[in-house]
Length: 610
Image (cartoon, rainbow, N blue to C red; front, side, top):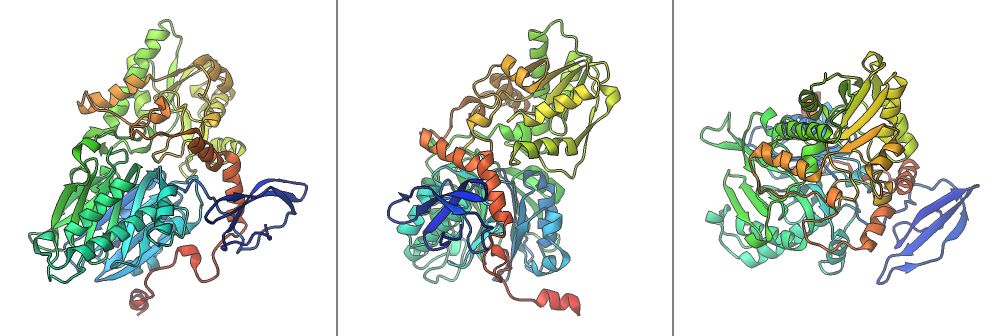
């Protein structure tokens, strides 16, 4: 590794390590990608400046939580509300957290790896002053774990623009090349959010130059040339949506100008808008954007609505609200991610007018009906959920089956979710740490376990064995979701096909591999109907590619893309990145790996000290 000149166009990744030597693949970044033959080097722990870097694919902000607030009163402080809102959205990301605020033209940023409660200490909150800001929580992804990729991200021109983004751009590598080669913009990380930020900023600059004088009804006054107007913001958003493919929802904070919320043309990733009367500015309103309505509810805002597919909403600093669909209506068709209802969203959220809780009740109902249909003489004694998400479905399934519902697993809430933890051995150990059995609920019984979904099957295998160890006579497994057989390209870090337990297997083969007596999956049609019936929207389409292999954006996703996806997402790649990050692969001292405050102003701390 020490022979790879990090930061000068040479990038390497360790392919394998054995007996003190490492096989290294080296690539040269330039007009052409030159693949050099693998070489063997004596293995030594890399120095800090030598950090292997992934060339493809760029890391996505997989299943993150985003939050934006604009308060009407310039003297009010948004920091505590952002902190509280991110805590409510913590289930959407436990890997990193960040907040940026704007205080009369000065930006303040704090971000780092960790939970919200750990990233933000009192002195950080004192620095995060201002009446408008963004917040972000990140789920562990296929990309780097460096906090330089934690959000919000920032570029200083024009005016200072920040982004908080949830989702995945399927053409991120192409866009990164466009930014470097055609726009002359520097891309500093492997995050597709940085691409989203730079394309918007560049388009905004061009719109400012073309706008000339004016403003007024467009949301800005003064008439100076190069003012950022609402029209120039919408023009930039049209450019972003016409270029960026995939599933995404996001927020831009344009310093001193506006807060902008936007959603991809298929509405795959969720985002809602809320409002309330300002408690300190009579006749004015405060505004919120969030991934889920639960954040709006908790902070005392009234849910206004979900953003429409391809829509951007601009809220200017003077409280003006401007909305526009940024692509032709024919290109915008709502197809929200159905996995939000299955697993990710909180049950008390409302998404696209549909109660997540009600949809999960319907999932349990249809699951029980299928059990009765296929196993009319079943000998199930008790229904037990695998905590936490499956509880709602399990309650309804037990009711329909006429069997008692029991809590058989007790969860340690301080252990993170496991389905994208690198390394099967790590996952197995994590399951045992995360769950413990109440043996009296299993002893001598035929148990129906209800899970929200089964991905690799590692967790399910361990849980089934735990049930048998607790004395269960027979163990049946049901999944509220259909078998997951395909990767997701829109912002869920589901592994590649060969790591999925359902890939290439039928239910009896899956049951044998998992170690249960039989396994039963929800039918895809029943899953979609569960959500439709909960929202009384019989014709609604959904993004369900991880079950069907059909990608709603209509892109041709070839084998090369999936091969590169496998290269980034498989367990070996994740373990190598962890070793690289753990070995001290950071930026030079003083940079804080990109996590320093944007502002060097310490007035907040000085005030606190006095």
